[in-house]
Image (tube, rainbow, N blue to C red; front, side, top):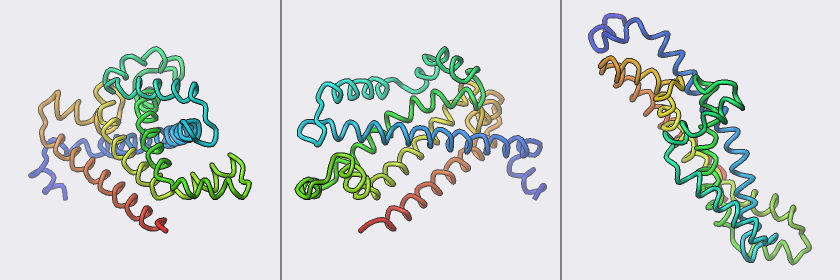
Length: 226
């Protein structure tokens, strides 16, 4: 194994432990950010859906404010958002660098995207199902849990899959500002020290992560289809 590694990726020989550490840092960032963004995004998507014109809790003022805020954060490139949020990140996390300092901007960068994905999934629900639930006296909370959330599970899984794949790219980008993880590893050695073999290996690992996420998403989405 060592001989093969020396022939194909000489610069990697002494960096395997660091690569493994960065791999786990990337998974850590993705898991924590994904859980927080999923919770925030799903709640915001539900509010946007039920308060839109003609829906069960119509409130156009609230819908307009939320819609504009989400569009605002979605319009800011993530690399600029990272720099813009440094004071906020320091206030919340106590640092703006490393894995800990990356979570806050990653959540701000992922939650609006995830909200739109969930909003699209909820919008696929047949209006007939909602009207049928209303006709038998089901209240707003009952419609949210028994119709919107229950019927849109495949769409939620598809949206979650797309969001996590997008999150892989964002965690790599966080490495540009010392965020840790595989992105940081590739930039420090592959880009700044011209060690191309490390860049190639990092890219292969990122592709494998995306492939696994897509496979899991497709599997669970098919399992939940009616």
